[in-house]
Every structure is written in structure tokens, then in C-alpha cells.
Image 1: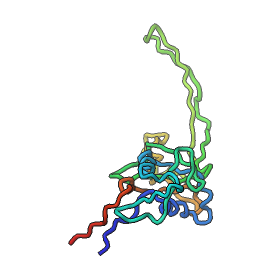
Image 2: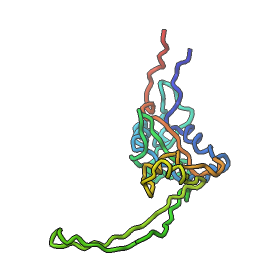
Image 3: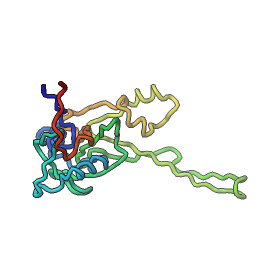
Length: 203
């Protein structure tokens, strides 16, 4: 029996699988954000220059495709690479994201009492405060904020925090996925290696 582990690495094949989730709009995806461990493993595997002829193996099996491992700011297939260690990592599985330019928008809305003053007469012989309030709105293309669901769960919370914005329960998809300009995909780093160890098959 063939017990070879499937390729879950950041190979060119898997990178393309993520890009082509948008079908003929794949060229819209202009940026990929990866964890530094993914970039490190790509570079450790010497996937750095197609001219070197390096062969990358996974469990003794040659990868069907190779990828040029860039530095941050370089690109893979025209997609610019950004490195961010705040990306999710769980049990050796790394989450990366592909974005189109303008995939996320921000706007600022008026807020009551945008500026006011205050004074604490008992602190440091009196301290005057100038308080400035600003309200920003996140606008991911193709998604709509579900205010009623958020309000039902958080009756005493006037505005969502970052943890709320990360909760899919509070978002509704309103566009066809093919025209939503971002893709999430997961890969591992531990399988990216230059190795010649043959696959072991239980006897």
C-alpha cells in the first residue's frame, strides 16, 4: 500500500490551488501574507533559485512543482509576499491569506462628543485632559456585518472589539465567493525538507 503523506506544504501547486479559488479572477490576488516559519522553511529547503537545480523532496518523493522562496517584498507568480507572525498557527498548521488590492476598506463615521475636556484636580496638583473619540468601520468586500446577532450576544457592548470582528458568526456573505477578493489557506512547515529518506510502509 502507498502510505505517502500528501503534500500539505507551501508548494507552488498548493499556492496555485489557493489562487485559483477565484477562477479567472485569480490575477486580482496581489498579496500573500505568510508566517515567518513558512518563509524560513522554504528558504531552508533551498527553494531559492530555479537556476540552481535544487530538488526538494518530501518523504523521498520529488515535489511535482517548485517555488522560488523570496524575501518579504518579493513576489511569487506576481503576488507580493508579506510576513506577519500574528497569523494563526495551531499544531504545526499555518494559515496564510491572499488578498486583492482594496479587499478591505476602512471608513470613519461621526461620533457623539468627538472632543471634550476634563480635569482631575487631585492628581499631580491638577491634570487637564483633552479627550478625542474616533469611530472607524471595517468594510471587507463581499461581507456584511450582522449587527443584530452582535447586539443579541453583547447587549452592553456598544462597539465590537477585534475578537468580535474575528468571529464569523457576526458576518454574512453577500457576494459570490468567486468575486470575493481574499482566500485563506493552510499549509504545514514540517514537511518541507531536503531529504532522501524512503517512505516507510508498515509490514
